[in-house]
View 1 (cartoon, one colour):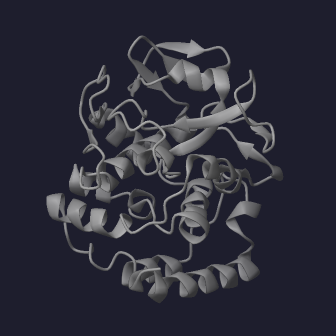
View 2 (view 1 turned 180 degrees about the vertical axis):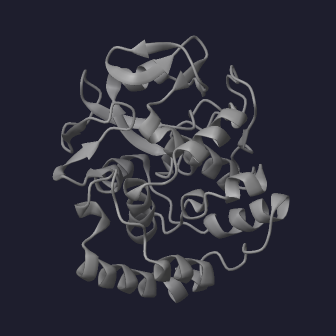
Length: 272
């Protein structure tokens, strides 16, 4: 564990535990009507984890955040199964996970490749940059989510944009030949996962430099669009308790890094 992690990891856990005793854990609250995080926890993150990024904008902020979040524990692709069972646990049923696009609560153990099971959706499509399931971007749980097998297939490697025809199996989601629009409740989640990947993977660790752009049909290029739409989604759907808890679980239990755009949504506009 790095010196940075040694300094802040345990105090943040202690703070979260104290908050849980006083107000109940985030996981125990409905995902759509949670209390905001205590200011003490946000301040602890700024005083420690994000201290080298504060006050910066543009390329300087992106570079500082890249350095911070690149300090992480990497998972194998098989380890992702167990990680998702913790990160995406249904706050109303600890035996289930919530699927990203359908919103369905499903047994943690009903995972695999068969119809109506859930599998591992790469929100930044793994063909965009050709990283596959390699340890690194292919196994980074900040953008891997549980999803119904056939709905995952319908999304495929399409870029994100508004419009298309509604998916019968996943009402509220739309798709056409070159793009996918997720349901309103997770539009911001999708945007912040894409932008996390763009900051985390800058072409410095044997993988492609991932960047958002303002187009669709990016194919195998290390690009993902549409940036203007993703920025709009991030503003219209700010982080909720489910997304914040997910960020905390990844940080505390698995990768020990964070998605900065969940903690500081305003940094989306500060960089792009």
